[in-house]
Image 1: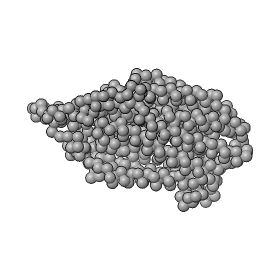
Image 2: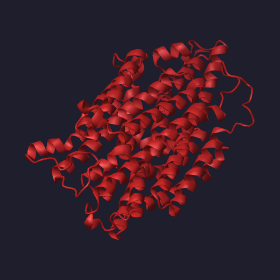
Image 3: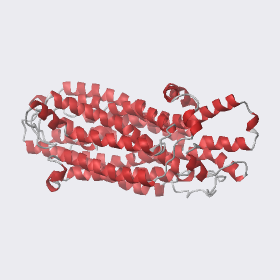
Image 4: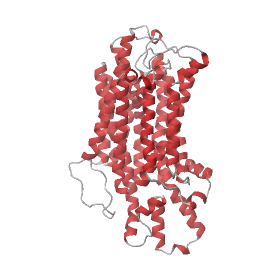
Length: 514
């Protein structure tokens, strides 16, 4: 939502691209610092709703509030100042006239969205891991990518159409209507999930004993860097690839529509000097912004179509034959592995980014942007499939122990108790090996270390995605300043070329996954 129309919305309020780059920095900052805290707290929550649902419901509520505040920032500012709205449409043309208070409110609510979405994302991802058995983790990641693509496609389709004309009750501007639609869609998905999916609170021993929540969060944040070397090998390599990859994806996702608009502006010679912004034909400016929105829609369509089909033509990693329900048969030889598919997606990503040097028309830019949807579909699915498959392999030992009669529970029992896979495996092994003779304190310390493993893996992987976005946002902000000072109208194109360099680095690292 914010990626599709948020950037044009802020540009329409007169906020320069270099400033919006700093505002979008709140997203990766929140992902690196806020989401690990919510993930750690969620693991120890003993709320009657369960460990994940309170954070999903609370995060969704604050996201809805922030979206509405984001859309109505100018109205609130005008109510306080008693002035009239400067724009009557989200893509209104002409010189920016929004007040400083409006810009401050927009920046505040944009940052609020970035923070509020963290407990929602953390809770949803953790609930998926909790409730899906290991052999279904790849399918869960694929379906997550499909629904994300569907949501992006519907929002982009709504942005392309004049939604405020056929649905005036949603708002008097297109952006307000889109925000209301996003709120309704979020409520329509989160509410059934909270009502229909079972979730259980943390056990009393896990929730109350040992270090307090503050100490646990501190250890999680402080120990994430040191624990990177202790990650499973595939997960560790995925984190390295994600770091390089997201150095490039940040610019693409946040400035996709801006790039097409800027190509249109230069191609049509609308305005080459920022000091005369708005002096050209406003209809041409509107056409350029619509071209950017259409490109975003095509990008979402290709992403959704790719997410639907690629999991069927790519060989998903399978649990070892010893895992219950798995098969020793290998996948068809013609099907590429997930690692190879991710490598090819990075190669396509890099090629398209360098191709922007030869793109000078809006239709050509739209084709490049739409083709990026194929790479983005793989990037949204492959890393989570690889990590999930490796976690499934770690759980195989517990499943084998259970079949040999050494355990004291089953997969369903573990889910009902809300135990992590590491805790289940540890308890299963200890019941047949006389663990009652072990030193109680040493066993407790080992248990705490093992319980922290899953939360640390999630936190480190999320940081591998968020930290490069922080770097990319800072680089984009400085780059845009220099490009704007040079009198150029296409700063996004330069950011895309730098993204190509990052994609090459990610592809080089991805070759180790083959």
